[in-house]
Length: 124
Image (cartoon, rainbow, N blue to C red; front, side):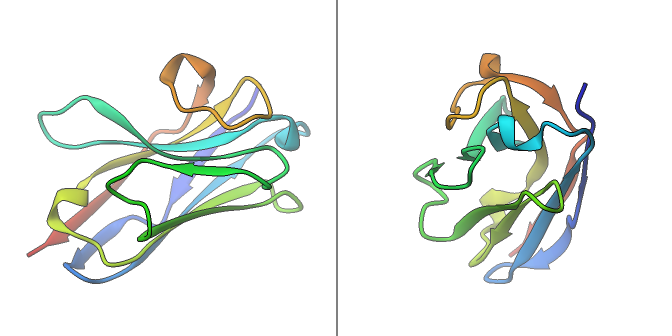
């Protein structure tokens, strides 16, 4: 069982930055690829980014590529999402998730564990 707790959300002006953190419980952190998803008001949850268990591979959805950076510290059982050049359309609840396997995972069914989410609001 893996428990995930996100932090770091908040209100920021367009063009600003935020860093989200996701702390994971358990001893098997490196066995799980980690991902960030988001759900904007009135929209379906969407994939944002993923990182492999070793941290050697990452993948981003097109709308955040070049602005967001995913990373992980396996010694601290923590995954991060550095978000720069934020836009109002980035406003959403952001969820951290742990995948079943170690390889990067882009789709919801590949993830077994989810955090409660943290709100990110970008004002124009």
